[in-house]
Every structure is written in structure tokens, then in C-alpha cells.
Image (cartoon, rainbow, N blue to C red; front, side):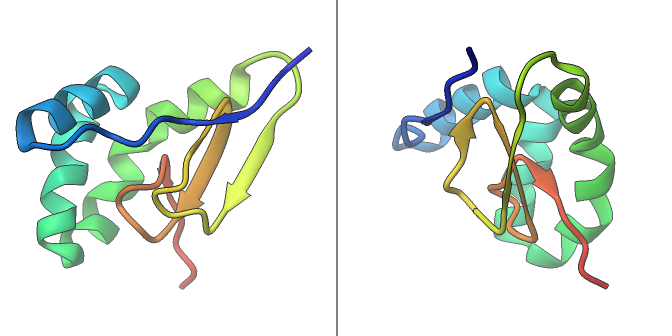
Length: 95
């Protein structure tokens, strides 16, 4: 049976946060997502590219799937959170 739980919030501090997101998404996604929180116009450019791998892994996993639309930084373990916000699991474009 698939269970879904809210993830623990990321730790405080730049290096602990980067380590947290690197474990969850990979180094390139973590760095791009950090840069996009500082320069929001960057996320529509890099978001689709860097979130593709994470989204594909979620799509191909077995069992039930939960899609959290518009969840922002409120990610749920085992679910895919899609949003315009760089803190979401994957980029969502409403254009």
C-alpha cells in the first residue's frame, strides 16, 4: 500500500538546504532551484529542463500516484508537487 506523508521542512542555512535538496532532486536541480528562488525569472527557463528527470521517475514508479497541483513548497513524500514556485518538485507552466 502506498502512503503519502508531508516531508520534513528543509533545514536552516544555505549549505544544509543545498544538501537536503541535492539528496531529493540531484545536484543540478538543487542548484537551479536555489538560483531561481533568488532570480525568479530564471525558473521558467531552467525549471522544465531540470525537473524532467524527477518527474519521469515519479511517472514510472509503481503503485498509486498523488499529484499535488499548486502546492508550492508544501511537498508530500511520494507525491509530485507541480507549481510555478521553484520550491515545488516540478515546474508547471500555465501559459
